[in-house]
Image (cartoon, rainbow, N blue to C red; front, side, top):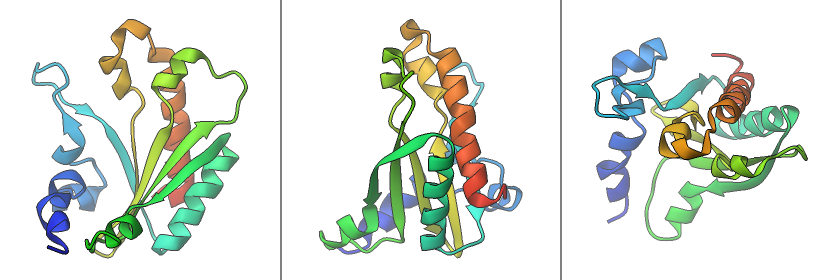
Amino acid sequence: MAGSWEAERRPRILQSDAAAEDSLEPSAAHRFDADMSGATVEFAYKKSHSGGFQATLEAVERAARARGFAVAELHDIRKTLATKGFDIRPLSIFELTLTSTEVVSAMDLLLPVRINVYEEGETVWVAALKPTLFCQVYPEHELDELAERLEKDVMAVVDAATGGN
């Protein structure tokens, strides 16, 4: 049973096609047709990091704090699943909140922001869902401006942590 989750589930969720990896463009695994119109929406922002896994975790934490985020939680998914008999590649998920006192109640729908750090082959990736995606989920809350601002900050964290790769 060990490893079956990785073999069956991970490729559909985290792996991208070789052409997308080479160009660092999001793959089809990072797009979806939000309104069934045939137009796809990029829902993930990801960049590779040339350092090791632990160095990447430290870089994400530094970059997040430098941009006004606090690390609410850091989930070591590999460690958690190992206790249940599953052996997967390193995967950690940061949950980030804002340290600003100007957080408005509508922002609760967008927070915490999650940034994933994972290994795929020999490459360490830093990825985040784009907060603007939630504007389509909660259109009645008119989150566009807040989500766009938050998305710029999240993308800046990913860029800073990866050296802009």
